[in-house]
Image 1 (cartoon, one colour):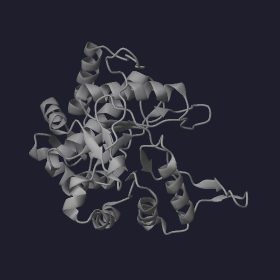
Image 2: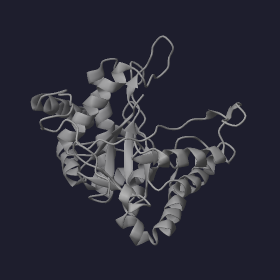
Image 3: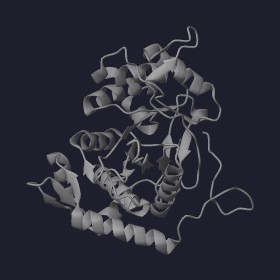
Length: 327
């Protein structure tokens, strides 16, 4: 098992950023609880509504809005695991996500590539997906492999199946990638269980994890809620990645965006724990600002780094593992 160094840990050396005091973190939490209880989260999936109602949430079925009392959210946070192991095909490359541990992954997903043999600038295909996985497997600085590029020569609806197949074949590290829908998730689960030896072996050592994104502001689409619940049932770790845009889909202030982001992720975590207490889940972020001049979402801007640091501190406050985007 690979255990990475700590960051922001009280020691004689190292580097850390003290974004907030404990009082400030608690104030952010209270503001988030106010939003979740008074405004609520848009969740239209009736199965998800029922799961959340069963643990104490208030459901307005006509409007498709679920309101979360603070005690329900705080109970879910306590039930969620503080440490999640991203197992690898090679056990020596298992990666542990827990308090203050820092690791790295490649970003995803590219749709164009410069062919190293012909120099042609072209769309990515399945063969490129395999080669990217092999390269990421070789890079010692990369702890887990996230699908780097898309297999655009395969049918879009089942492309995640093709990508999972060549990715897991070409990396000995943990694989994470989105799957699109529950039907694909179940097929990928069968594939990974076969590789692991059995469904029980996969549950004990999940070599694959997935990702889903709330829709800002304050919405969890049925496709996402279904994935969250199915992952909880199957024991598949899932990372909840809010992709809020300050000044676009959320308030222009970073503080307002952070509270919106926090509400979206905590709602997803509450749904996961309402489905199966203790289900592996990761607090994620790809939140940034909207460039109001070009209407783009820059991921290399200083604001994204500030939000990432804030999200990391919030996840530490909740004792949850985190995953943040880089630029």
